[in-house]
Amino acid sequence: MIRFLLCMLSVGSFAGSFFVAPADAADGQKNVILYVVDDQGFQVGCYGNKAIKTPGLDRLAAAGTRFTRAYCTTASCSASRSVLMTGLYNHATGHYGHAHGYNHFSTYESVQTLPVILKEAGYRTCSVGKYHLAPRYVYEFETYRNTGVQGNRNSARMAKNAQEWISENDDRPFFLYYCSSDPHRGGGVGGFANHNDKPGFYPGVKEVRYKPEDVIVPPWMSDKLEVRQELAEYYQAISRADQGLGHLLDALKTTGHWDDTMIIFLSDNGPPFPGAKTCLYEPGANLPLIVRDPTAKNPGGTTDAMVTWSDITPTILDYCGVKPADSPAIRTVDNVGQRVTRGPKKPWKFHGRSFMSALGKEHAPKFNEVFASHTFHEITMYYPMRVIRSGKYKYTFNIAHQLPYPFASDLYASPTWQSVLRDKDEFYGKRTVYAYLHRQRDELYDLEADPHEIHNLANDAKHAAKLLELQTKLKAWQKQTKDPWLLKWEYE
Image (cartoon, rainbow, N blue to C red; front, side, top):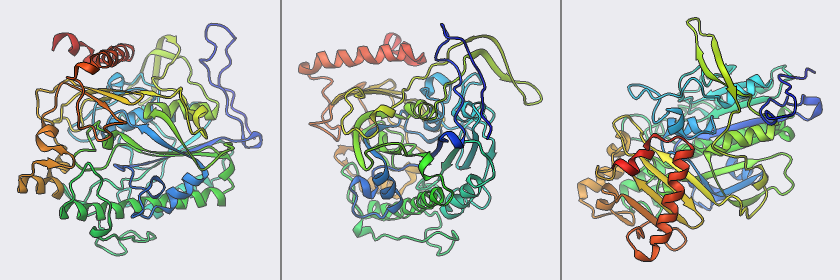
C-alpha cells in the first residue's frame, strides 16, 4: 500500500492550511460517493410520501441521517452544482447560472474544487452522469465513465459503470461523483417524455408507473388534471433514478466498501414546476439530504441541523481528513492545457462549514442559520435574490423586484403552467398568480406559523425590528462573501 504524503508544513501561522494525507485501505480507507439527482424535492418515501416507491433512498435513510432543514443556495442546476463542488457561494466564483450553451457561465480559474483537492491529496476520482460545470479543467476528474448511460437516465448502466470503476485494482481511496439527469424534464420543452412511454427503452431498468389519481399534490401546486398527470410522470423518473442508488448500495457491499464509504444523497434544486425550481421559496430550496457515515453510531435518525450545499465540500474534506493547500494568487492554464500557478499564497477558506458534528443528532442548535444567493437560471432569467433563514424566520431581498418574475423555458411551457394561463386561474397553489409574478422588494415570513410563505411580515410594524436584524445580517454576509450585488442596498 502506498501512503500519500503531499505536503508537510511547520506548526505556525499556516497551521490548518495543508493537505492531510488520507489513510490507505489498510489503515481505514475513507471513500466518498456524492449522489446528486436533478430537480427533486421531498417526493420520497422516507420523507413521508406514501404514494411513491423509493426503496433505495429508504434503505439509505435507514443506514444514515436524514436532514429536514437542508437547503440549496441557488435554485438552478448548474449554479447549484458549482456551490456543491467548491464550498463557495456562486456569486463569489462567477458561476451565476447555466454553464452550457449560450448561457456560458463558468467558475473563475483560481477556485479550488473538490475533485481537484481530493486528487491532489491522493484520491482517485470519477464522474458518472451529468456534469454541468465549467470550465472542465477547474472541475477536473481523473476519469469519466459515461458509456451507454442514455442521457444520464439509465440508472442500471450508470451504476454498472460505477461498480466497474470502484472494483478496479487501485489501492487509493476514491471519490465518485454520480449524477442522474432524472427527474429533470426531458423529451422536448415542457415535457416529461423521457421515454417513459417506451417499455424497455432503458435496458436493465425496471419501469415503475403511477396513476394520476394516486399522486400527492403538494400544497404549493394546484390540484388539476394536468398537474396530476405531470406528477405521475415525475414520480416515474424519480423511481428510475432511485434504482441507481439501490444498485450502488449493493455494489458497495459486493466490493467490500460498505464499511469505509460515506454516501451523500441530495438534489441540486427543487422540483421542475413553477413555485419550486428557480425559486428560493421553500419548495425550491428546502431539499432532501441523506448522509450515511459508516462510522456513525446512531443510524436511521433525523436531524434539524440547518445546512446548505456550501457545506458539502467542507464536510467531505473533514470526513476524509483532507484540507486544501494554500492558494496561489493566480491559477490559470497555459496554451498546452497545463495548470499554472503563481503569486503569493494565502490560506484557502470556504463559505460553508462541515456538518460532521451534526450527524446522528436529532437537534443541532449550532446549525440554525443559513444564506442563499440566486441570480440567474438561463441567461435571460435575471432575478437576483438574497436570502437569510434564521431560526423560524426567513427574509428575502428581491433585488430586481420591479421586474416580473422570469420563467425557465421548460417551466413556462409545462402543461401545469399552461393550464393556469388557459383557465386564467387566480391562484397557483396557495399563492395568487399575481403575487407569484410580482414580488415585493422585501419578503419576511415566520415559517412556523406560515410554512407556505403567504403572509409577508415585512410591512408589519410589529416585525420591524426582526426585519432590520435580518437585513443587517444579510448585508454583513454579502460583504464577507464578496457579493457584487451588495451595492444594490445603496444605489437602488
